[in-house]
Image (tube, rainbow over all chains, first blue to last red; front, side, top):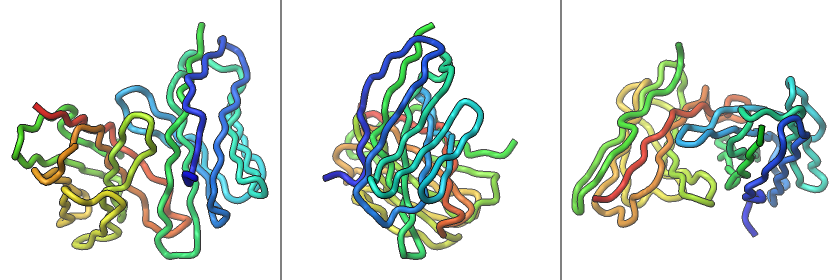
Amino acid sequence: QKEVEQDPGPLSVPEGAIVSLNCTYSNSAFQYFMWYRQYSRKGPELLMYTYSSGNKEDGRFTAQVDKSSKYISLFIRDSQPSDSATYLCAPYGGKTSYDKVIFGPGTSLSVIP
Amino acid sequence: DGGITQSPKYLFRKEGQNVTLSCEQNLNHDAMYWYRQDPGQGLRLIYYSQIVNDFQKGDIAEGYSVSREKKESFPLTVTSAQKNPTAFYLCASSMGTARHNQPQHFGDGTRLSIL
């Protein structure tokens, strides 16, 4: 089993839709959870950064973590064509002084005007 | 504007040739990283450095080398020993490698291809 898994997509939605992007992980020691957005031929940019279980909202984006199920979600409200990108989940945080970030393979999202 | 600059954007390598990818940051971050991105795979860690003059191998270090002589700079050399170098290479930095300092900021990558 891979440490972090995401449905690769592509996921195609109409403009204005609510988008749900999901990620599962296997290491129960993960405590910190990040979501990155990556546009084509660009580097990833940090979208959301959360600690432990619960929800975090930032504008149109909500990150949700369920540590009991090892399941992470990113919700995008009122999706825009500019949200078309690949979304990477990236958990980390164990018991060592250096905690390697594990990046998922990403889900490709296309928002159709 | 603070950020990470990678150069060149595109690079071509001939058989048997070593090539060096540049990464410079002006964020005053202590830690720097090199990743390789292949289609359908997550980012894979090549090397990382927590402090100047120190670096550690990541998961796929074979065929690569790095140096960290200055805080701002972390160049990656893809040697001729790397038999499948075609990929998108990403450099990142963070304040540190402890849990609270971990969010990484990325450059815009270098795409390396074989001639």
